[in-house]
Image (cartoon, rainbow, N blue to C red):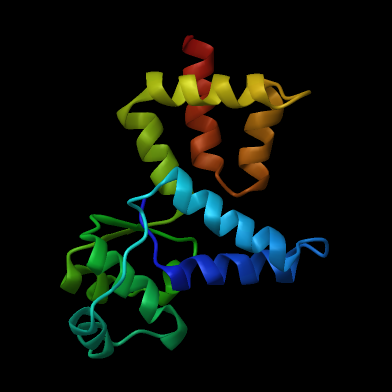
Length: 158
């Protein structure tokens, strides 16, 4: 998991726009906590990487910094639900696979069901009132329907 400062600012901006009670102080705290929990996650795209991105044809100029961060991080996968703004040809040219969140989570369930089951059980145990069913329903509401289906199978097999 990697990000740039610009990506974190964009996340905070999105939260502030969509959660009426989200404050700038909470945004600052979130950034500090993320960088503290993942001290090697933040990347700073070089000028050369930004110039390389400038030559690519992206539908939304505002997403260019996201691709620059992925290239700077040496990412194999870029996970975003904003897939329309990262054309297949562009992603192939930089050697990065594009996946939405459901596809990435589904891949993780398929590749390592025991670890994903452990993560699921940990989440259910730590969230008061949470159950297997409510957690799967939350995945479905978040448009992670493939992941929810795969996790339901893993839970059934457990």
